[in-house]
Length: 396
Image (tube, rainbow, N blue to C red):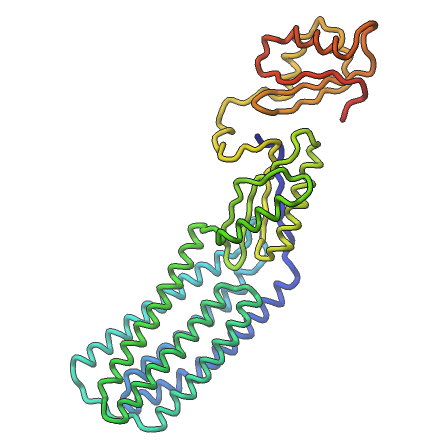
C-alpha cells in the first residue's frame, strides 16, 4: 500500500567533465600509436609477403576507427540528462560497445578467411627477415603499454566502453605475439606458420568481439547489478533510522552508471513529509556508498506489501472527498461529527482508519462515548477500520 513516491536525480557531478577529458586523452594517445604501428606493420607485411603481419596491421587500423568512435561516444554518452533524455545518454556507450564488438567480429572473419585460402593454396612464403620481426616486437611493446594505460583510466572513470577499447588494444598485442611466433617460424623455414598465425589472430579478435556483444546486449535488456551488490544496498537501506523494511529493490545499468528503485517501509502513521525525508536519507547513504548510482527512485509504503504487484489494479478504497461525503451522510445527526476541527485518514490493512479531532465535547459526553456513538452509526460502512476521537487541534 503506497504512501508516497520519491525521486532523487542528482546533478551531474563536476568530476564528470574531468573524467571525459581524461578518457579523450588516453583514446587520442592510443589512436596515434595505432596509426604508427598499423602503418609499420602494413608496409613490412607487404614488403616481406607476410599475411600475418598484414592482418595485424589491419587490426591496428581497426583500432583507429574504434578510437574515433570511442571519442564520440564518451563525449555524448556522458552529457547531462535533458528533457528528451531524462535518464542521461549512457545508452550511447552501450550502442558504441555493440558496434565495436560487431566490427571486431567482421575483421576477424576477413582475416581468418583470407588466411585459410592462403594456407590451402600452398603458396610459398619467404622468410620475413630480422627487421620485420623487430617491427613486430616494437608493436607488441607499444600495444601492451597502451592497454595498461587505457585500463587504468577506464577503472578510474568507470567507463565500460573505455575498458572495452583497452581490451581491443590487448587483443592487438596478443595477436602480435602470435604473429611474432609465425614470423620467427617462417624465418627458420616453416612458412606455413605465418598463415596459421593469421588464422589464430582472426579467432582471437572474434572472441573479443563476441564477448563485447554479449556484455552490451545484457545491458540493453536491463540486466541488474550483481546480486551481492544488491544485497549490500538493501542491507544499508534497512539500517537507516525510521526504515522498517525494504523490498522490490531493482537495479539496471545505463552505460557506465546504474539506476535504482526500491520500496521503503516506514511506520504507518508518520506524516508524509517525515516519510519522504526518511526516503531522502536512504538515497543519500546509498549514493555515498555506491557512486555508480546515477538515479534513485524510492516508493514509500506504510506497511510491507512485498510481492503484491497487483494491489494497484484491485478496486480501491474511497478517497478523502468520497469519505467525507459518506461520513456526512452517515453521521448527519451525530453532534460530535459537526464539531470536528480536523480529520485524519490512514489507509491500512485494506481499511480506512478515521481519527476525528475536536476542540470541545458535547456536554456530558466523554471521548470514548463520542467514539462509540460514531461506531454505532457507521456499522454499514465496511471499509472503516479503527475509529478514534481526539481532543485537540489535530495534526494539520
